[in-house]
Image (cartoon, one colour):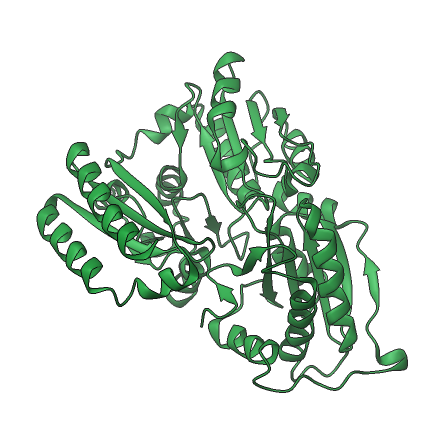
Length: 449
């Protein structure tokens, strides 16, 4: 694995690393693989975020799909979780999202969902890769009326927004909320969702121009949102990323409330209401140590997976649990969604605040975060591969783990979506974890950068 697909689809700089030709090849291969055994003409739903390159790549991918006889329902600009939801609602065989999520505008990506709304398992991704890379043959090209057709889904945004709103049983009347759309896909949906739920929603960063997606806004840049909330005396701020599958918040004091804290708030509420299946929450190896301690204190079982909401969901399905997510803000409410959904998460959290009549700062206090330092080291593709075999790095990691002992932990991993290696150290002593992180990062940079 890893030749094309990372932890969240195929991703790269648009028109170079991810070219039109490659998008068309992926479309042809995806249609061939996912339509295997289908007795009728396969149907794909295709959505995109607001990047300039999204039109180019979606057109190329759609051409590839149609060229092997698949029909396409074009959703237009929608969030990634809308594709996951609408693939089922529209009875399609698969769905594709054109987006690079939280990355800057020069990047783009292709995420593929199966007919049940789940991200593809490794086995199917490998079959698509084999076709794209010429290791097995593509099907013959159809002609005449066997070529695929494209229709436009005029109600895609409304259908998705109605779905999110239907998950909330308690209105948001009276809540003063700032909504940061990251100049991305949420720009098409946020006002309808949060105004529709009764909130007094201040919609920010919702004027996409193709290049300003995630630029100094959204879940990767909370500073402006925090200032806006404090300056305007609002109850809470909510931020999404470019394709709106992540949600992070700021409380009434402008303090960040990350995915781990959101999970703690919601998990405790679900447990109190008897809705937390098997009293279990699924997170990842990057989940803050404070969350594990919170779970122990509240009689909640915590399971950690590899990083990526697809792995969180796989574990949830295996164990038949209903709630999990990541520190980055991918939170999965399996009662309502098959993937991380930033706007659904925000709606659930805001409804909880309104129902309990408590401020977000108070709700977030149920969990005490451990000090945590994350350092990102930019490396080449070769550098990411060599990380696994470099003995100098292995020795440094073994020493760091021994030095931390039972007072903390270190996690080092190549990013599945960016040309980075991430060093995360957490523990009880801020000075120790910062020193350890810097020492390990310096060695990795020297060996691989």
